[in-house]
Amino acid sequence: MNCSAEKASRKWPDGAFRRGGAAMVTAAVTLLWLGMQAGPAQAARGMPTSPWDDLFGVRPQRAHKAVRRSAVPLPKPRPAEAPPAADAPAAARAPVAAEPEPPAVAAPPPAAPAEAARPGETTRPAEAAKPAEPPRPQLSACRQALTEEIAIAPSIPDIHGVGGCGGEDLVRLEAIVLPDKRTVAVKPAAILRCKMASAVADWVRTDIAPLAQSLGGGISNLDNFDSFECRGRNRVAGAQLSEHGRANALDVRAFGLANGKSISLTDRSVPRELRETVLHSVCARFSTVLGPGSDWYHEDHIHLDLTERRNNYRICQWNVYDPMPRVAPLLPAERPEEAPPRDVAAKSDASKPDSSKPDSSKPDRSEADRGKADEPDAAKSDDAAAPDGAAETKPQPTKKRRQSRRL
Image (cartoon, rainbow, N blue to C red; front, side, top):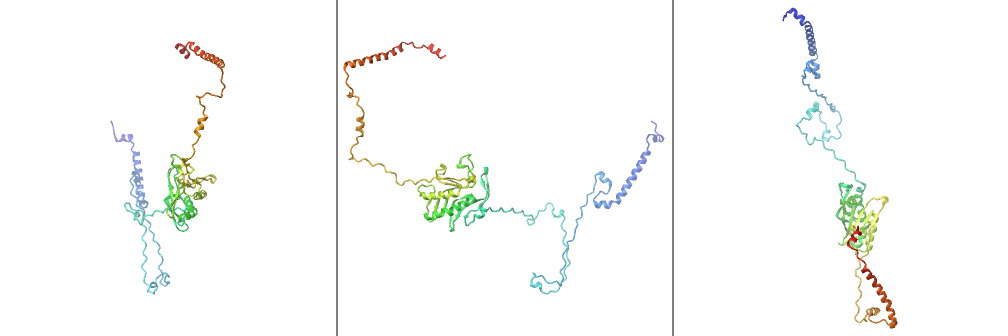
């Protein structure tokens, strides 16, 4: 292979390479000079100091921005000739030689965000933000009207059960306060809606208290048979939700008197007029009244509720039964021994005919008449016997015939 300097220029024209290399060197020197001129400005901006830093991915760390600190303006010092403040004490108002005020000290600048909350530091309880208190629920009109002067009925939280069981604006009716400041205890305390509790309290204060005053010193307690209970009607499985499940019903069995007696509302020994008076009072106040005679579930207590129905329809089913007789009815007196014997048996024997004696009412027949009368009877007996003989002469069906008849 023949190689020489003269032939090399023909084979590899390096003139173009020389000219390109000179241009690259010139461009590099120019960029370096521009980078040196713009270095301080770019460093302030956080830009790369050299153009090849971005090319190779090498970028210096940016300096944090300087926090701007501004001096807080302070109030001007109070002049010495100014009058003293009105709220200052007497000692402060005394003439004192004016002292030179110390120079105003600039307030410390606010801490930077990075310095204010450093990782790993816990905030103090006093500095922690307090949770906002939830707004108190507004009391209903019924709750505002049912004060301690009417009834002792503290409010309880709302109940939201399965199937609509429970209710809102609930109270625990513990006692009813009469107009003369005496209390009627509800045993046990009843959980009711506010409207139902208010209706019960008004009923006891207005109707029952004056009625019991004439019986034995007034009413002292109310027998609560049942109030709130999440169940169906009459405790039947699968039945419609009862008003007891909505805290809108109360079962009353009796009320006690101050003298220790108890008046049962379904006891037939209680005077009928008293029970009828109670009947008229509850039917005028409550939308549903169930007692004896409605169904056998309410034979020993009275059911009261405030069910809302269409057209303000009301139900009042309570039969006030008459009291039981104190003395049982008398039995018939025993027959005295000196009473004459009864002839009922003799008359019954005489009315029956005696078959052993001949009947004298029929006329006697002669022997000839008897013979004539007997001949047709004999003929009849022969005729009657003939079918029996004919029946015997008839051939009985064989077994084969019976089988053919079956087919």
